[in-house]
Length: 224
Image (tube, rainbow, N blue to C red):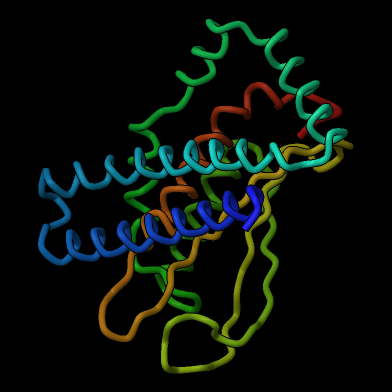
């Protein structure tokens, strides 16, 4: 196996292993610890940090995998990194990192971190929460509904209605930064599934990013 395939396999194995451990731990804690218990709050902060750590790990693995890419692509990425290094001082980078509000993310999880399979009342509650929050920030929010076969881990195979949420700060801007994650949770027959890292915490992180970027992009005619 060459270096590229080794790095790819390592990344997939690391991702799958971490996801299994996280889901097992989350299910155990949810069963044994009441929601208001201090240990439950510790668990929630733990998952936020675990998600950030997993993202960093994936980035490191991607860097090693990039060593096998074509030279022209490496040169292009080097130019982008060089431009970022020239334009962003260390103090400014620290300022950007400091914009992340963990307390705010935790408040969002109060609304999102619940069992929310497709077609349930909870998934509708979560979608309305996301919509109302983004509309308060002057994002234009649209729902896109479609129907697919149930591909989750339930024995009942049936047609389900899915709903995508698309929020755009400036619909007329010619350039857009697109960030996405899914906000539903899987369905299991034998136990309730919260889906903390899959994908309540990423949703809360993206909402925090939306709040953070809004004042910077509010009056931009070309970027949204």
